[in-house]
Image (cartoon, rainbow, N blue to C red; front, side, top):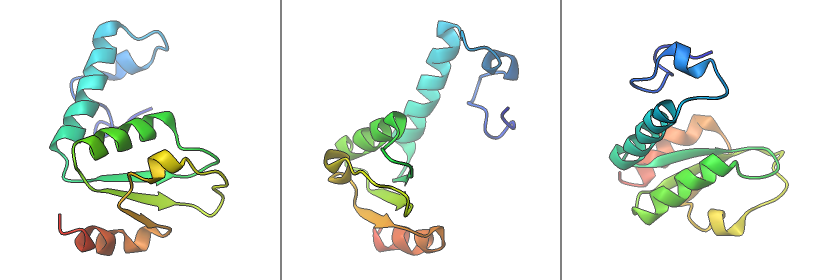
Length: 108
């Protein structure tokens, strides 16, 4: 399921096995995600598929509201754009190989 490095901090493997997670587990995951966004210098969002994932859109919105730069990595199969979300993105790239250069260009 998750490696120990992927598992949210303070959440056990057992807690993640069930679809009906306890409110305590959900709160741990939420707080881990929120703290990661708060302490980050920027957000890198993977935008693939036909629409922006709702969780990714929320992370982009949070980062934008907190004046943190956002880099989007897109894929050629994307067909539809959410222009509101796209308006929050500082830089869009289509190859992972240029991510480091894109980050450096933002002076973060």
